[in-house]
Image 1 (spheres, rainbow, N blue to C red):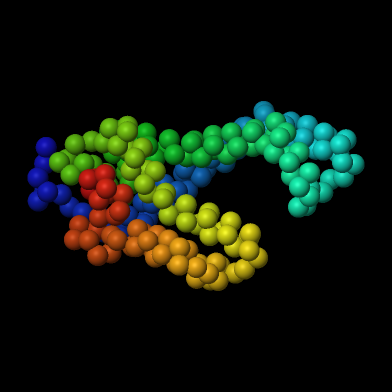
Image 2 (image 1 turned 180 degrees about the vertical axis):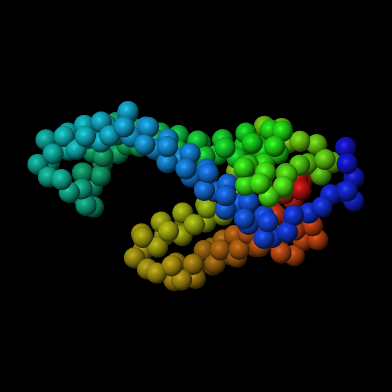
Length: 199
């Protein structure tokens, strides 16, 4: 146990540099997983789909044809693609989660920058606490994917998508506040830190 007075809080530059290193490593892990899964599994699934698709429609274009889209969604490749994306996502997530609850108390970037993530009483995070902290840290990506899908669906630019209606605007402002709250908190605490009671 340590008292809050003994903690030296990491500044924004060190945090950003540590985060950049960890993002790079997590994405490298995901790239390796993509290559392994593609070579040993997914490529064959895609080949099988296109063979079945061409045999049924005598075409290689899906477009917005409802029948072709339905065929895609009912084909085994669709479930395989969802599982593929999930496995790739999990591989990167485990990097953060496992290292945050390990003796290092953070990823390689944090280790290099001499930063640790701990509970407010000084204890190490448990696996579940580490997982909660990670998933809360990626909440802003929900907004990114939502706005991207909204923009594509309505054929408008990103600014218009965000300001198109009250919900999108409020969602955007909440996301911005979520990302920038550490700028105004006394201990440079992020939204996930506030919720998980970590520092």
